[in-house]
Image 1 (cartoon, rainbow, N blue to C red):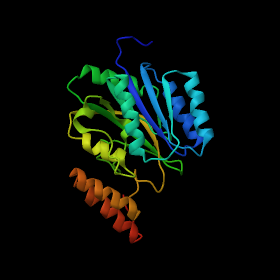
Image 2 (cartoon, one colour; image 1 turned 90 degrees about the vertical axis):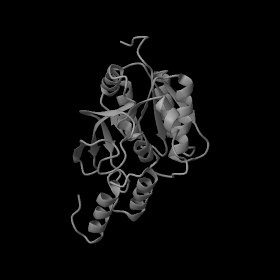
Image 3 (cartoon, helix red, strand yellow; image 1 turned 45 degrees about the vertical axis):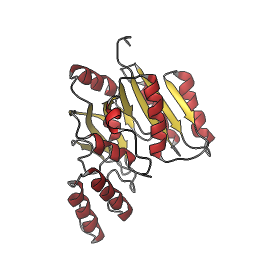
Image 4 (cartoon, helix red, strand yellow; image 1 turned 135 degrees about the vertical axis):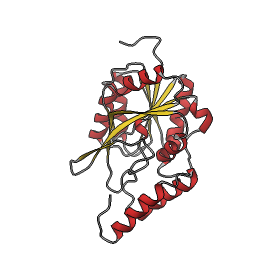
Length: 252
């Protein structure tokens, strides 16, 4: 049961053109959390899809820890997440977590991370392994830190102290994609720890950035992030895969 002394976790969930079944799995995993002191800030940035908004409002009616912000125009994900951050700051939660509407958490995700962070006060953030769920049904466990993996995302594995935002600021709204990857790269130099357990599932978009830089547009995005954040270790791996893919050869 929730203890009034337990620190509050604020969770930011941006949604645009959400898949109904994915959204259900995402929010069911949220409601199943064994750590109960959380508040989810949901930004539904999809004026053309009333069914999405109604679905999320249904969850909010079931649980008052879910707060929904409806928007009448589309911005980019960074702007939506920053709006969520403003609400998180006002909520005075000690920790901030992130979840996309097509991903989902294990039921003990928040409990394990909060317990570890509370027992190790010098840390600014923690993360854990995640499972990539591919459209072909294969599941691959990523045992690397977010930001040092095949792709450069994995923000939904992160639990960070709210005070870290005072040091690094919010999401970069000049980025139309990969703002979450940019955030991971920006926090990577602050004290952190990886928990050797899989607590999140990430549903892979075959053309998305998370695991795929064989598309030139994605490769350019990764290159831009590497230059911006001095993450030079990203470049050899992703450029190699792009070149091998272009030649019709095997790549990692």
